[in-house]
Length: 132
Ligand code: HEC
Image (cartoon, rainbow, N blue to C red; front, side, top):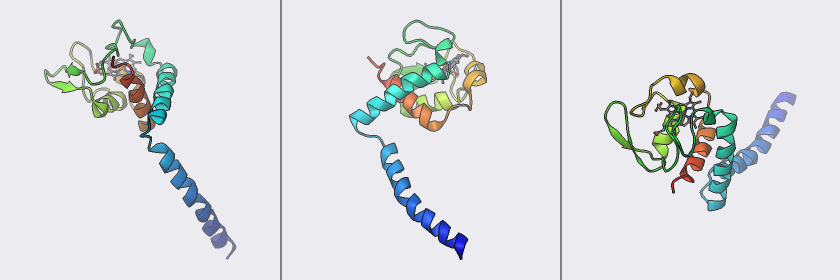
């Protein structure tokens, strides 16, 4: 009976903890999205994104100024809007959409598959602060 008792107890403690984590992760308020953006600003440094991207002049990759919400032309000739969904996908799976004038594989080799969805979402919150 010992092990069963213990697992029941830990489940009792785990449930409220998970509830707190879910609420904290939902974001939504201006304060929370600012802290996500701050985290994103640090993440782009620690992931080394800056070796290819700047907020102003072009580098190996497209610059990030006013990228969020803008219209992007892709290598396949389509245009798309750089909304949250596009930006998260561009970070998680760089070759899913390739920006016109740039090569596939370059970002994918450097960071493809290395970034968690949570970190990508914080990075996008940061990119959204560069809108204007
Ligand atoms: C080795 C160079 C390199 C690194 C490192 C790199 N990127 Fe990129 N990135 C590129 C290139 C090249 C493109 C354009 C081709 C494409 O769309 O995949 C690109 C495209 C993007 C786009 C789409 C831009 C647009 O104009 O639509 C975003 C967003 C982006 N990168 C974010 C990041 C983030 C965030 C990191 C760090 C986690 C990162 N990149 C690291 C080279 C890089």
